[in-house]
Image 1 (spheres, one colour):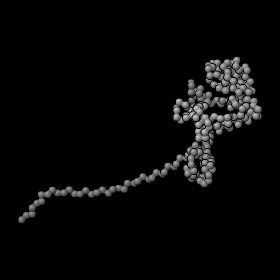
Image 2 (tube, rainbow, N blue to C red):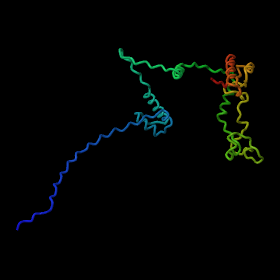
Image 3 (cartoon, rainbow, N blue to C red):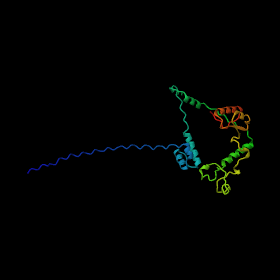
Image 4 (cartoon, helix red, strand yellow):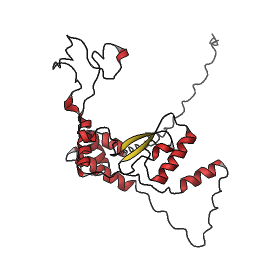
Length: 253
């Protein structure tokens, strides 16, 4: 008997797998170098940060905080020093000169370029005892505590200004030790320096040029009243300059 022909469809030949080409991995990029700290960061940093920055700058990381800080600041100052620009070679084409600004911008730039002459302020003629009294007053003022009203923390309307404590049972008025500081005679400065300007001048309130006539420029200075207008103020300031009198609240228009 003849063999029966198979009716099954022929299977397609298997596709050969392509060889996968190896993918070249990109070379790792170098780690970015940490940025150098600024001088303000160095002054506020703690010792651990200072030691790390010292290693970054190839400096000695041992020693106290102040020594480390000064060492790093000195190194940063050397690195941040402006480099000298190379001189232009002979025969090289010179660049075009910068265009001059016109109008308001040019005027502002010209004013900045001009060096303003420093005019020293007038100073009073003080005795040695008064100079010493002003120094003592300055030292006492630096140590003087802030005086607040009684129960300032309880009532907002009291603000942060001093008010004399009242009441027969007031613990603050009776200077109990658990309470805040109270205005007392021991906080005052020397008597001869009371009421004087920090420069040592005695202040004289001025509202017109006539008030300048009785001022002694060696010991007294003028303070223009707040109600004086700008035009009249300018006249008073010019008159004071001619008389050699210092104006404490001068305004430059």
